[in-house]
Image 1: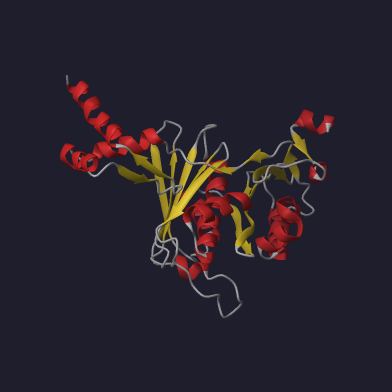
Image 2: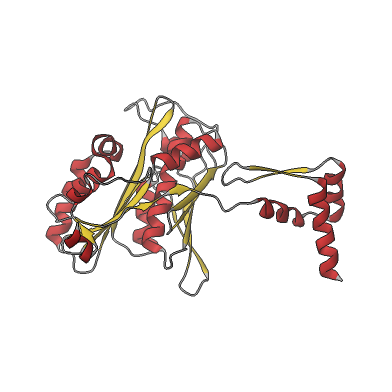
Length: 317
């Protein structure tokens, strides 16, 4: 590993015996740097989301794909080490809206409007009906911070409702980034067994021959979940870059489900209520505040609620 560490890249074989985090992000290049690859192994992240929100099987697949997509978009679009990218999908389907946030430091969180919404398997192929539960009568919107710190939101009309094609459409039309996106979630025995995503970006100088080889490789890959089950994320990235000299970053970045909520933020949210409404909460013995992002419930005592009024009084004095 000494020589590869000096160049900050490693061949895929160098990962064969390395311990990897439960969920992680891999970055790499191929074809002499004219292709950029970002992949995420997100099985543990999506399983935690399933447990936190009590998601149905199909809702798990929909949110899991969106979580993976948010991580990939953060890696490609994030300008700082703490950049966040939020993906919102609202296609008018039974699950309602889907929201996921990915950070360049590997933190992910997300939720759906109706976590118990579900649909039967598709009769055509026996697969989860993600398109059906998401719907296609709506849009996919991506919000990120520009280099000046201002938020920017771009959106596209949903084309497939399967998430991957819609994310690829967004990158191509709103960000002018030639790309390919693969996303997948595979559930087995009532839990998430495999989940992840792969984004391949064409860089300046890429040749037609490279793009033709990439297109053939992706066609040969088939469904991403099949690749994750057979050879993991590393195998999927190798398959996509077959014959194109894949070089990977020497370290995998850990990824995890992580929310930015806290007891203090839960209390601050009650400041949006009037003094009379907060007094009613105090009289009722306290108030529960639910974080939609992660499902955490904070039980605030009457004393904590009363302290909000005291703080506002001091601020006015």
